[in-house]
Picture (cartoon, rainbow, N blue to C red):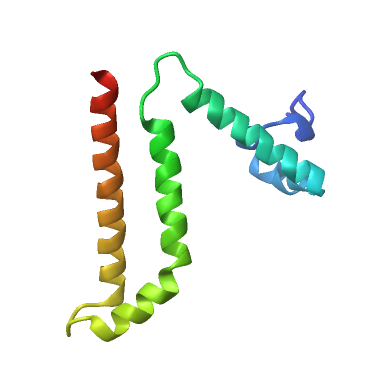
Length: 121
């Protein structure tokens, strides 16, 4: 049965698998269209997590986590070169990467908990 809503007006989660190629081809990939998509995403994020009456630390924590992840990806080459010469025998590089991610996320969670406690005072 055909949907009464045109494929172009559907959201991504409403598109069926067979309609996906047509839906992607109908998107606006011009610089103006891409800028508009980023703007809509920013306003959706801002209104959902930042501009609320009773907010928490979720919005700020996501931005901080994205910042940490971006900087880790940016310095990955230098970190891996450094670690390749300083790893003890028997420790794999992938295990060190997992430990780094765990430490960064633990720091973010601790900061979020402390910030939440300060806000409640």
